[in-house]
Image (cartoon, rainbow, N blue to C red):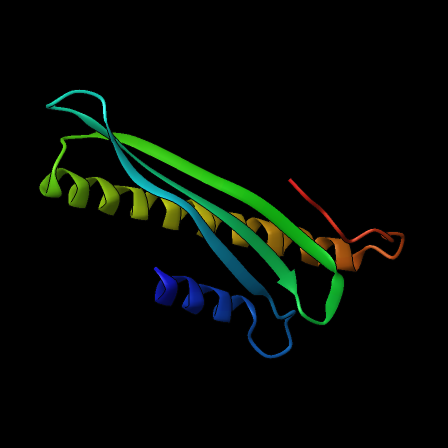
Length: 118
């Protein structure tokens, strides 16, 4: 996941464009057993996107996903692979959206407040 996100972030930060830094904190990666035959896989990540050259600009988002899975190694592996894919898509969309909003904010001469939080 780190390599995929790094390549996407590098694409946003190519020469002549604003540079971004993404900090991820994994806050949950767990499987809860709801019965002997079923479980729920969960992942939660705190994401912070910043622009190193603009210390006042920062956005934060918490991503949380869960899915039912069969308990045990096979269920956990399949469940977490699915959650990894969902998290990857959500992070990619969020980064692209925030970078677009960031570029629009920079083009407005009246914009004074760049710090945004969700």
